[in-house]
Length: 120
Image 1 (cartoon, rainbow, N blue to C red):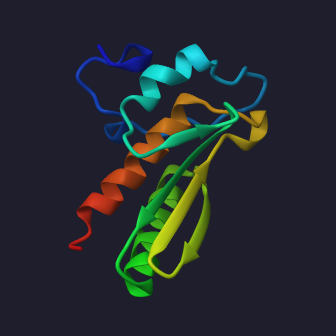
Image 2 (image 1 turned 180 degrees about the vertical axis):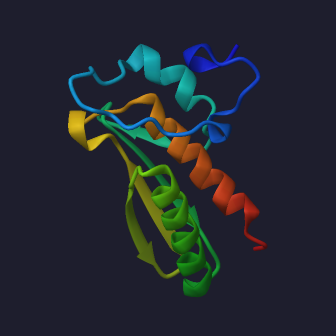
Image 3 (image 1 turned 30 degrees about the horizontal axis):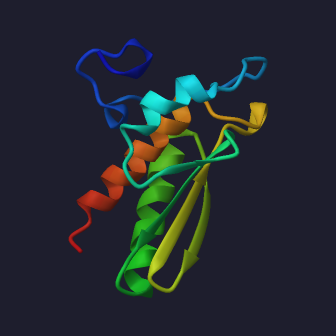
């Protein structure tokens, strides 16, 4: 069974659930099994997920930024993106609670899937 009671479903196969506020952010104990499913991501101050995707040039970084942006729009969950030559940095958190929810991990997994789908 996966984190959050999921059976046979990866994080990337789920959809983000809008946070209406008033829910507590995930605790470090709740974060640990979710983070274990996301190699390359780190948790900053128990409030943000962060990952830098290294790429070969600016064009690849721009392509990934556009792909992640499309996923974010589809999920209605918007990360902070930083684009530079040969890298895209993604920072995710649930703004309404200034912390992490399971949807943040879902979006991170979808970002990983978007990167894996690119031909470079």
